[in-house]
Image 1 (tube, rainbow, N blue to C red):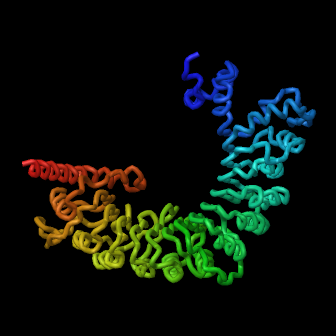
Image 2 (cartoon, rainbow, N blue to C red; image 1 turned 90 degrees about the horizontal axis):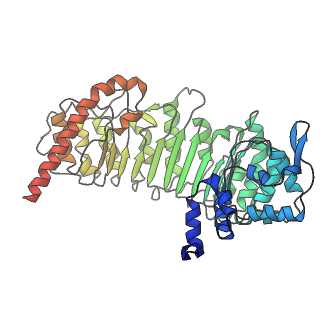
Image 3 (cartoon, helix red, strand yellow; image 1 turned 180 degrees about the vertical axis):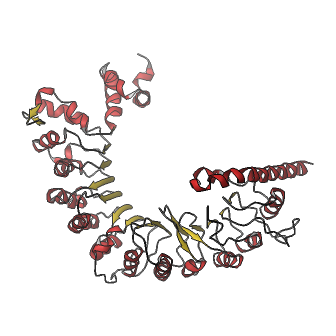
Length: 508
């Protein structure tokens, strides 16, 4: 026997490259391959179906058109099953299967302690809509070793919620959790019923670091705010309308978060939610705006939202703010972000996919002056030139002085208005040597050579204007893309020529 075959780590590496369909045959080849091959085969289950298929077929039959367990498992069969389940590290169940009910019956007949079936399980993703059968399975899948849980609730089954409420006791080491509601009928009723159970289970997870959950109401959110290890929170505010009365939380609020993301479907409900909090101390805040109905005055409500956010956020702690992934863009004035101006440590402002903001040269300079530590500034992308005011080069030449640390800039500007700018020294000697990524999307282009001269004078280390943004451009800008791309390619050719000349001058 070759010495390499006696090294277990080498055998595991070999098995990790074997096609999954060939692993059972490899495991039955000899004892040397059995353990590592079975480890790889059972480590990550993409369905619970193998748990039933690995058992003798005569255990199951058809009753009333459904698969059913016909007889109990003997001790030998249980040992075989546990030999496999003890190897499982992750389970993913995304849909419902015909074997769910017999699997539930199988688990109910298990003579072992619930936690002993999957003693090494680390990650569980459960999106199946068989809620009652899921409760039986989760009863044995909620083990002390579980670190990550992703579950979708389709109905407010009392049995399912009871098992879920025991999560804090059964999985005390849980670090990541996502719980989502997808009721096919009345989602509000399910949220009202499920929220106390979810809040109860979450409040006991003292090692929980990342959480995705819906608005749990005043008492539930108060428990969230008290989680000692929580650092990242994704909060779905769609159910906020069902919580009618809110009082300020007696606790400090979300003070120690590194990341906080709100999913908003109604600005007014989101505004009520913010008013219920005393403070948000997150370093990074992101808003995902997905409206489900039109608003009478979205711009005014959006300003109120940011005004409230500016009052309760920790001005010294906030370093990144984003408004993106929006299904529609809200037209807004530049003063909508004025309430966040006191956050002088802001290094990232990412709103290019969230709003259509009309910006004058003066407004852009005021924005950059408010946040001198900005490293990433993404204000607008693919705006309607006819309906939106856009700044010119006259504002951009101030960026090296106002935001010297900028490394990435996304902006729509009018590059045709450059008269009065010294092409030899556009910013009067002030340059930004840090900027490496520049996205100007559908900015109007006049003379490519003059545009390249100004950009090179402002950002001497910029190699090219990033044109990849056009891959995701709206369909109504297709004709504009066809006309603009040759112009921008000419700009990039000039920038490349400048960099080559600089390199040769440096060499000589």
